[in-house]
Length: 192
Image (cartoon, rainbow, N blue to C red; front, side, top):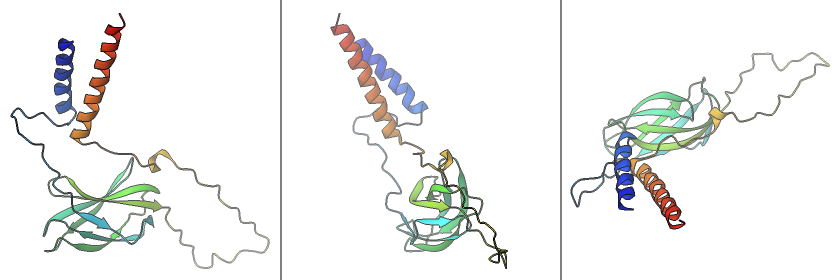
């Protein structure tokens, strides 16, 4: 039984660093790093916006004077939206242009810090771009029939998907899998 436990621990210790997970400190009393950007907040008066429109965006509790890259992140696509710099109080307020080429669906506006960490997130639904009718388009010949479009069905690229897990989460998942395997092995041996 001890041999199986040591094999599981060795396997877990080898897998976690390779998967980008946390490594186990060799010294007693060592702590895991804390989250650096846990207070920054992105806010908007709108929760949805058509592609090609402007989104009012406010940021607070950011690093004073630091620049952040803004991105629109979906399940399958990511769009760079530019860069913003927080003022001396860690605030900013901008009108963010959403590209007209964005596929409608669920997205997050993320602010990426200079160290590459995501400092803040804001959920956003991007709607279809508003069609601009040419002048005189409202005038139709008498008797013309206008057909309604079929209802829209969500596509896979419009569905939100969790993009990543922290090393600690992968560590817990690995421990649960290892524990379940050890319990199953123990039950098999006990049944003999």
